[in-house]
Length: 217
Image 1 (cartoon, rainbow, N blue to C red):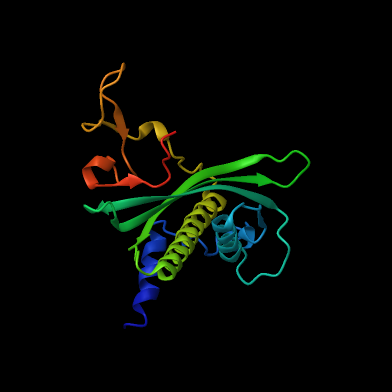
Image 2 (tube, rainbow, N blue to C red):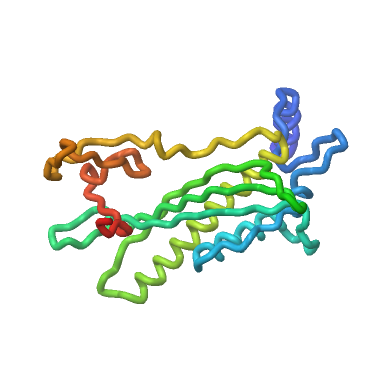
């Protein structure tokens, strides 16, 4: 019975309209896995960008050795770090990394057409070890790799859903990020300064967080 249960479960779900994302459609259309192998991932700059591109190529192409020539995927990633758990000596007990990416899928032709676009994001982190510099560097590189792989998995899933449904994926809207009064800032000509919420929805002042990429510009 334990062996037959998955079969019964899939049969029940298919009766409710559920279909596996990478399963056969049964209507003569190309399967999603085959269409994904036709996606060429354009070059992504920087070391983390290359890690993201390799993860996308592996996720979409799989074990296929054929040359992708049907679509072009352009990805614009962003990687930032935040120091949280600030101590009295101005050190932090945790470094959190935020990875975001905006992707666009184009046709391959003389005048490429935009077919779909979407956004992906993920959070990860590591605990700094200031007395062990090389160990900390290794932790940071491993975290960067995990962020790239998670972004690749999210993007791959969104692209696969588009191939299956051709529904437009949801895109991020920076205007929807809430703002809060910064009680520690000096008022200026416009009144009390505002502070944007972080990816967790809270302002930095509420969690003892500082943006390591903010240079006061």
